[in-house]
Image (cartoon, rainbow, N blue to C red; front, side, top):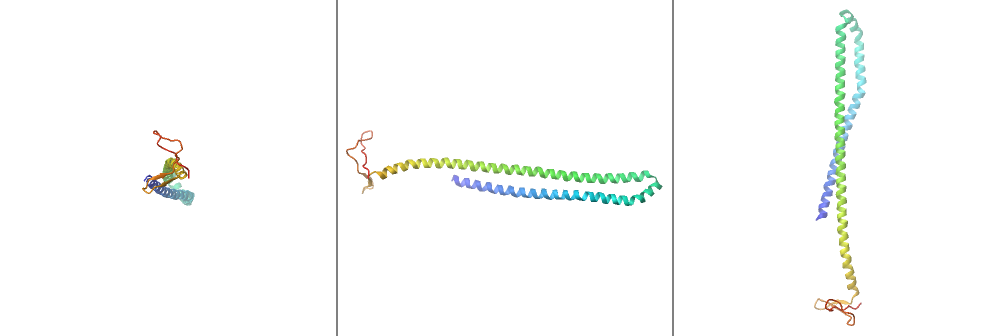
Amino acid sequence: MQEDELTALIDKTATLMVHYERRGAAIDSRLQALADALQGLALQLPAVVKTSADGALQTLPAEMSSLMRDGLGSSIGDYRQRLDSASGDVEKTAQALAGQIGHLQRLHRQLIWKTLGAVVLAFALLLAGSVWLSTHYTRVIRDNQLSAELLKAYNGADVTLCDSGTLCANVDTRGARHGERRQYLPVKPR
């Protein structure tokens, strides 16, 4: 009965390990996808900044002449405001991605620790089961050794089954008597 329970526990532990491995693989793939997305954004950022700067530089001469006419003050302020706004948007996006990556890394670490804990627990249960089984079978072997010694003595003695189903022995009537009332005689060897 205990072996069945141990087998069921091992099966459940194996199922749990498979579940944790699947979840770990899913988290790894999500983490990799986010890392790839972040890397893609990092690669696109210089091109976006260059395009923005190129667009700004292309319109700059026309704007400069207009600014010179209208007075440099208001246009330069608008340009700085748009540049600060774009810079703030890029910074917020980068911070949000960094936060998501940090959160995924914490989840991944937690999953690794949980998986490691489950493996250690399963190993401890297997070790405890094997120790219990070894002590149990050591006792069984010791008990059977006593029975084997007794059977060896029976096989060496001149003993047989009588017609009535009881044991009959060829005893040595001249041998020394044994027992509390000296009622036992030694059996002759075969």
